[in-house]
Structure formats: structure tokens, C-alpha cells
Amino acid sequence: MPKPDPAKRQQWEARLKAWELSGMSETKWCLENNCKYHVFKYWKKRLRKPSHAFLELKDQTPLNIEIRIGKMTIHFPLGIKTALIKQYLKTLLELAC
Image (tube, rainbow, N blue to C red; front, side, top):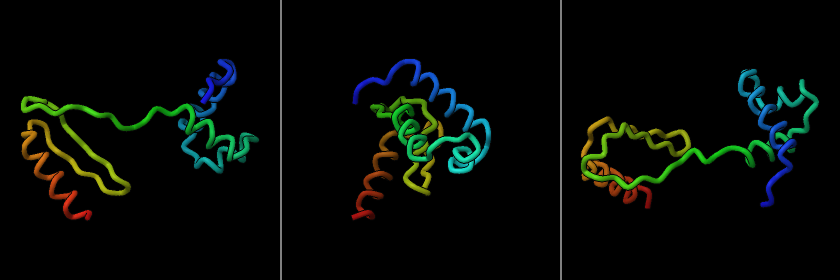
């Protein structure tokens, strides 16, 4: 995907920030701001960073881990042993099959 014109990118970053701060739904914000919904969705997808990260877990990893899959959230509290996380994830994988 080619990089967008910096001025257009900056304009859409500002629009997306305004939408976030408005508290309105995407469709309502687009209607009130004379913006085509499909264009809004395009720029939202293009400019948003992925909400996931990959991280190697080590036995001393001091993280408060939360995994979201659709409407499901799995929370691993601070200090949980990585072996236990691996066991939980293995079990979930087996259940999904």
C-alpha cells in the first residue's frame, strides 16, 4: 500500500481523533461531518496501528496479560507463571478444535 500524501494523512488523523472524542457512532459522525462512511472506514483501517503485539514469555515476565478474541476476554494476572499460561492456551486450543 503506497504512503498517503502527508497533508491528507494529517487531515484524516485529525478527523479520526475528532470522531473518537465525539463519542458518536461512526455513521452518525460521518453524517454530521459530511463524510462518506466508506471513506471514513478506509482511513480508519489504514491509519490505525494493530491492537495486538507478540511477546516472548519468559518465566520472569512481569506482565498483566489480557487476551481478547471477539467478545471473549482472558485475563492472566500479574505474576502468573508462563507454564500455566501455556497450559491454559493449550487447553483452549484443544477445546476450539
